[in-house]
Amino acid sequence: MSIKVVTDSGCDLNNKLKQEREIDIVPLSIQIDDKHYKDDEQLNTKDLLKQMKNSDSVPKTASPSPMEFIKRFKEAESIFVVTLSSSLSSTYNNAMMAKEMYKEQFQDKFIHVFDSLSASVAETLISLKILELAKKNHKNLEIVEKVNEYISEMKTLFVLDSLENLIKSGRMSRLKGRIATALNIKPILGGNKEGKIELVDRVRGSKKAFKRLIELIGEKGEKLEEKILGIAHCNCLEKAEKFKEEVMKRYNFKDIIIVDAGGISTVYANEGGLIIAF
Picture 1 (cartoon, helix red, strand yellow):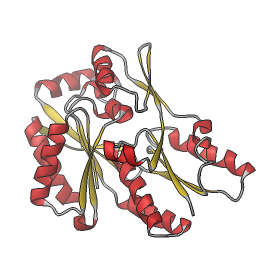
Picture 2 (picture 1 turned 180 degrees about the horizontal axis):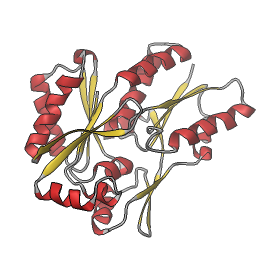
Picture 3 (picture 1 turned 30 degrees about the vertical axis):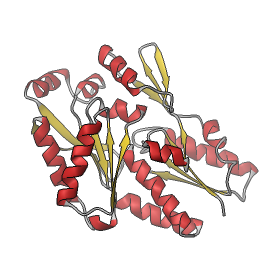
Picture 4 (picture 1 turned 180 degrees about the vertical axis):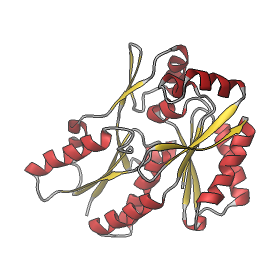
């Protein structure tokens, strides 16, 4: 049985995963003022960060159309799709629409769409889980069951070094944003069971935020020796590598992977942001 994993560009990869080409990315698009970006391998995230910093407007993102997903459905017997949280993006709905449109013509085709209830490296880990189960010859419905369980247990946390996009988007008032910036407040955010973003904690200073993020792994995680920790960084590889080093001193994960934040994750996390999932 041939299988294919299709995901949107909320899924962040590193060079190794890109070279293996086992995960097919359908790009979203990003607009900042009158400049448009396609969130694919050609996107220069440093240029994106510069544009965000120089603009007073909120970056706008647009989901891929159903047709963009349909193009990927022809290349394998079984298709597994992983999308950004349906609470954050319309990508899940468009992927579901693509599935329904395609199956009107090809009723026997197996297509399943997973709502990641998350973003970034969480999507990466879900995609890798599907591939792992398929290589162990699990049947389609077994993969669906096990991956849904995996998603329900997954924890996603991220720490922001900059509050700019939260202020621009209206998620934080300008006054509160200025006060938080002046006091060097760093929010730690996370995904809840509904796939929405919520405040987990707030601390003063980047060093304390870094330390608190490590502590939260122990407070929220279980059976870490059976899990992979994914770390996505927004233009701060050295920080991500230091985070991995400190985590390894304290916890015994099965594996730890570091990935680069793509365009969509960059819009959410901004420069210096770290996103973790396990």
